[in-house]
Image 1 (tube, helix red, strand yellow):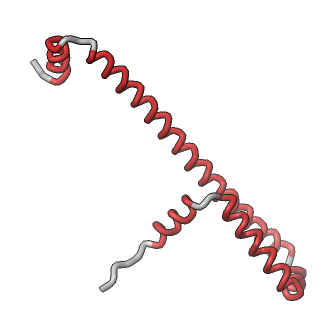
Image 2: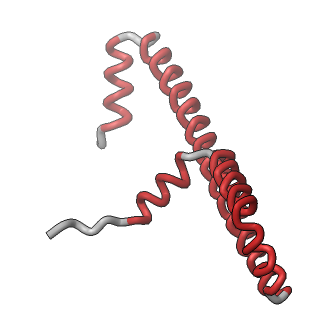
Image 3: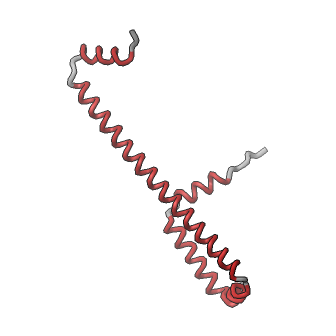
Length: 119
């Protein structure tokens, strides 16, 4: 029996790894081509839709753009935080390495024993 495929993993990968400008370009090209070829059909349908339905469709599109924008902003903030923490950890490690290298062997052993052993 084949294993079930979790589509949310693919969705998250696609949304997270393709830049927002690519999605906007694809949407604009698709909307432009659709409008160019199907405008004789779409414009009368759009005009026939009640105003609340048109507003709702526009609202759904705006909500989708806000969601994607927030998702990308959150991802960028998380990556920046990770870079900052990695830099802080590297600086701390460099400081500890420098401090330990300046100690004699006996001082380093005593310090390690004091830190990790119980009395």
